[in-house]
Amino acid sequence: MNLWITLETGLREIAAHKFRSFLSMLGIVLGVSSLIATMSLTNGIERGTKAFMQQVGGLELVTVIGKEISAEMIEFANLSPGRTVQDARAILASTPMVTEVSPEINIGALLSSGPISQRMQVSGAWPDYFVVNRHEIAAGRFLTQLDVDRAAHSVVIGDSILKRFWPNLPAEDAVGRILTINQTPFKVVGVLNVYEREQDKRMREIVKARQSQPTSKSQNRWDPFRRKNESVIIPLSTMFFEYKSGQLPEDSLDSIRLDNLSFRVGDLDRFRETLSMVRNALNITHRGVDDFDLQTREEWFQGMEASISATRLSGGLIAAISLVVGGIGITNIMLASITERVREIGIRLAVGARGADIFLQILVESVSVAFIGGIIGIAAGFGLIKLLIAVAPSENVPYVSLDSIVISVVFAIIAGVLSGIYPALRASRLDPISALRYE
Image (cartoon, rainbow, N blue to C red; front, side, top):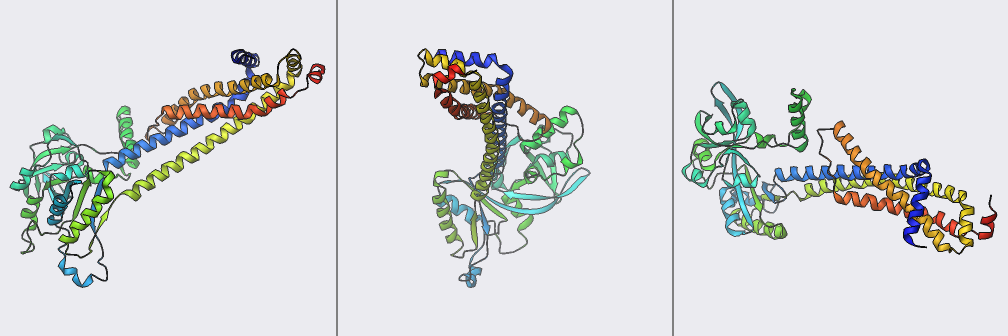
C-alpha cells in the first residue's frame, strides 16, 4: 500500500471521529506543552545564572586568600610579608596567562557631600580592578595608571553612592563633583553601571510600568551586587599616602599588607597551568611560607550547573510521565477503533491487502494522532509560558529554544510509535474469515 494513501486514510479516520481523536491527543498535548514549558523555564534559569556568574567575575576570576600556616612552617611565619603589591608584580611578571591583577586596600571612611554624610567602605586599587571585577562605566572614566602614578585625588563611585549623595542627578552630571572622604576632597571621575539580577531588573521594570513604589519586601531582599553598587574606588597609591603611610614607619607602598588580591586568567584552557605558575611566583615572594591559597569558583559553578541539570531532569521526567499517559490513551483509542473496524480490515485482507499493510495503516494513524497532538502541544506550551510569566513576572524569563521544540515533538512521535505497535500487530494478525463474519 502506498504510504501517502495510508496517511490519507489515517487522517480521514481521525477526522471522522474528531472528539475521540482529541481525547486521545490530550495526553500528548499536555505532555508536549509541559515539556516545552519545563525546558524553557530551565533555559531561562540557566541564562540568568550564567549572566549573574559573569557579572560577579566569572570562572576566570581567582582570589589570593590567606590561610593558616602548616605546622612544618609555623616557625618561619615571620619571614613572610603576607599579601603585598610585590605579589601582584610577581604574578604579572612570571605568568603570561594572567591578563590583569588587582591589589586592594580597604578602609571604612566617612563620605560626605554637602549635608549628606555616611560611613562606607573605600577601596584603593589599580586600574585593573575594573576589569578583574567586571565593572562597566556609565559615565566618565575608570581610574588610569596616571592616577596611580600621581596619587591623584580621583574617585570612581557605584550607582548606589550616586543615588545616596546626588539622588536627583544623572550619572553624567555627577562626573566632576567633589566627594569628601575622611575630610579629604576627591573628584568624581566616573560612575559605574547599576548591577542587578535579572529578577530584580524585571521587578524594577514592572514597578516602573505600574508607576508604584517597590514594597518593603523587595527593598529588603538580599542583593548579591550590593558591594559593586556601593563601590568607592580611589588609586592604590592615594589610599596609602593619605590613609596608611603614617601607621607603621617601616611600611611602604610595596610592602604594606593588602586586604584583597585578585587576578584574571586569560586562557581557561590553561587554567591549571596558570594556577601552578602563580603558586610558584607567590612561594618566592612569601619566602616559602604557605600562608596563602588560591580561591577559584569551579566548585561554585559546578554546583550551580548540577542544580540546573537536576531541575531540568526532574521537570523532564514529569513531562515524560504525561507523554506516557498520552501514549496509553492512544493505545486504548486505537484498540477501540480496531474493534469497530474488524469487518473493514477483513474485507481489505480478503481483497489482497497484506498484514504488513494493515500494520502500517494502524501505525500511521497512531503516529498521526501523536504528531498532531505534538503540534497543538507546541501552541499550548507557548500559552503556558505566557501564563507563567503573568503569574511570576519578576522571575527569570523563560527562553524557548528550537531544541526544546524539536525534542518535544520527537518524544511525541516516539510515544505515538510505541503506543501504536500493539494495536497494529493485533489488527495485522486478524483472520480474514473471522473478521468478515464479525458483527
